[in-house]
Image (tube, rainbow, N blue to C red; front, side):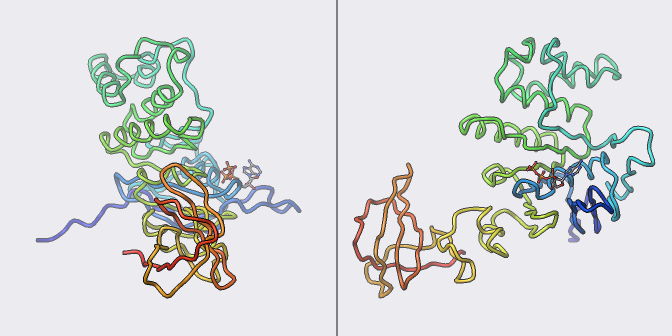
Length: 320
Ligand SMILES: Nc1ncnc2c1ncn2[C@@H]1O[C@H](COP(=O)(O)OP(=O)(O)OP(=O)(O)O)[C@@H](O)[C@H]1O
């Protein structure tokens, strides 16, 4: 049996974008980035503030002119703004952080607006389907101000995918929600994206947004792509301290002394490796324990309360 090779939807080659070129304040916002995205996959771009995430998203959306490099969608070149009357790409939809809904239209009318050029029967069918899979059926006749933040954000995303774009781009889609609503919205958006089989790239500065959502994770710093892999692979094998810290907790604060996650340290009575408990903090599900061993400070987790000052045996387990 021959296996179908995964289809690459988006291909980015040696992309570069700077602002204020030839001035003393030139900023290289995106430096030599080469990545590709398979059809139907979700990619999260994670990086600290100013790392170039939004610039990269705008380049993909054909809203910014690249200095050099190429972008293709389904094998076709993405035309840069300089070669078009109106910037953008018909098959790529970008949802900005401030991209709102029409305040004087109901949620249903907001979605219908995106489909205004389509035949009425098709339009109504499509709206009904979108309302159903997004869970917005019950609030379809409400105005945006009459629905929750999570519902508004879902409606914005529904508008963006109404016309079945090939690629959906989201800029910080979960940033203005509290933890409970964020968790719920993530599950709903994931369901929506996977049901509609749309490929998606979203930008975030919080790794929690990427876990459980993204198939692939791109880590950016100073305009550069540092690491691209599955979230699990990057979590277990970060290439440097920045990647290690932006993707989770580390047991040892100095990467050069070794890389371990706190959950890799386990208490083992029989172990000859001994550490002193220097402090313990209650964090809900578990305790965060700070240990001293050989002049180094380690962080580990424990479900049981242990006493400060105790000497405990520990072992370090490797990731499977
Ligand atoms: N239109 C612009 N003109 C000049 N400099 C810009 C412009 N847009 C972005 N920059 C600069 O480019 C760099 C990357 O910015 P970008 O907005 O892409 O980062 P980001 O990772 O999205 O940050 P944040 O998480 O804060 O949104 C920053 O130094 C920023 O100041």
